[in-house]
Image 1 (cartoon, rainbow, N blue to C red):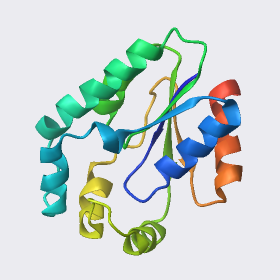
Image 2 (image 1 turned 60 degrees about the vertical axis):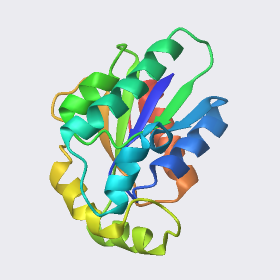
Image 3 (image 1 turned 30 degrees about the vertical axis):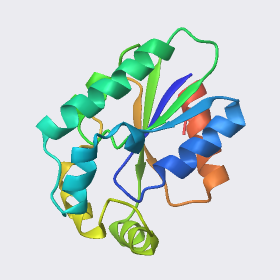
Image 4 (image 1 turned 180 degrees about the horizontal axis):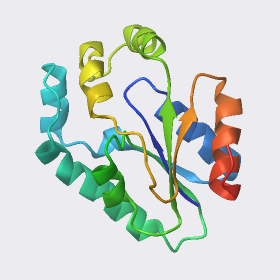
Amino acid sequence: MLLVIGGVSGSGKSRVGKRIAELIGGVFFDGDDFHPAANKEKMSRREPLTDADRGPWLAKMAELLHDRRNLTESTVLACSALKSTYREILRVDPRVRIAILDLPKETLMARLAGRKGHFFPPDLLESQLRTLEAPADEPGTEMIHGDRPVDELARAVIAWASEGSV
């Protein structure tokens, strides 16, 4: 399985992705680890990333998915994947599934306010929400209601990715 868990900051991508990897015996990768220092510094200064900033970052994650596409071990990658064009870059194989976690803005703000030591400041959430494009006729991509317990959400994503149902 090649699975990308997308969504805005605070949606639970990493937590859900890690749990999915545990449940399916796969390997988890966090998109935050692929950001160059310049991107993290820019966000720390409360400056939204541009498409140009995200290009090399997305290319690194696409390369990871490409390199792992023929392994028997499943790959789970947490990556915002906000735009259709970003998701197209990550779709290096027809087996790639992209689940976009969808939560109410109030829930996201509360989660971000409670985070300590993360480079993404809560006041950048609005720019991510403006950038987020709901998938429309994108193969293997689904918006999934993310405001539920982690285990329940992880199992729902696994069911969707495996069988095509939420």
